[in-house]
Length: 221
Image (cartoon, rainbow, N blue to C red; front, side):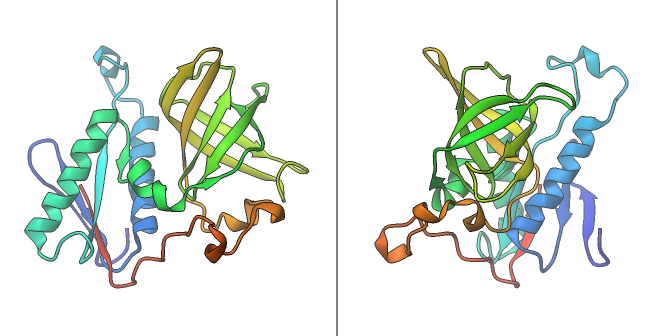
C-alpha cells in the first residue's frame, strides 16, 4: 500500500481499504491481489469449510461517481460486496455489469490449460473485454479454476499468455460455455482485435468505456 492508503477492520468480519486518487481498474487490481493472496494461503482447519478453503469477496465503489459522502460510499461498496458474496471468491463490479460496455464480439481459437505443465486444449472465444473473456469448449471446468490462456498467431494479431479465473460455467448439449475473469485487467484490447474486425465507433463498433477520472477515489469493502 502507498502512503495515504488506509486499511481498517469494518464490522466483525469485514475490512475496508481506502485508496485515494486511483482509477477503478487500479482499485480492482489491488482487490484482486488481496483476494488471490487469501485464496493461495493455507489456513488451519479450512478443510472443514464447505469448499475446503478459506476465500474472501469484495466490493469496489468510487467517489464521486458512486457516492458523494463517506457513508454513502461505504454503502455503495457494501452493495457490491453483497453481489460478490452471491458468487463467492469474487470482486464486484467485475462481471457482466462492468464488462457490458467494453465487450467485443470475436470468435477465434484460444488454448487453455488448468495448471503448469498441463496439456493445452482448444476453445473458441465468443467475446473479449479488458476484464475477461467468454469461451466455448468441450471440457467441463469447475468455477474458481485458474487457467492459463494462450492467444497465438495466426488466429490473433500477436502471441499473448493470460491468467484467468473461471467465474461462470454453462453447459448446453456437448458444449460448455465458460465466463473468465482476467487476473490483471488488460489496458487495451484493440491490439488483440484482428484488423478486419476493427471498425470506427460511428460504424457500429462497441465503444470502450471512457477512462475514469483521476479524481475518482475507490473504496474496497
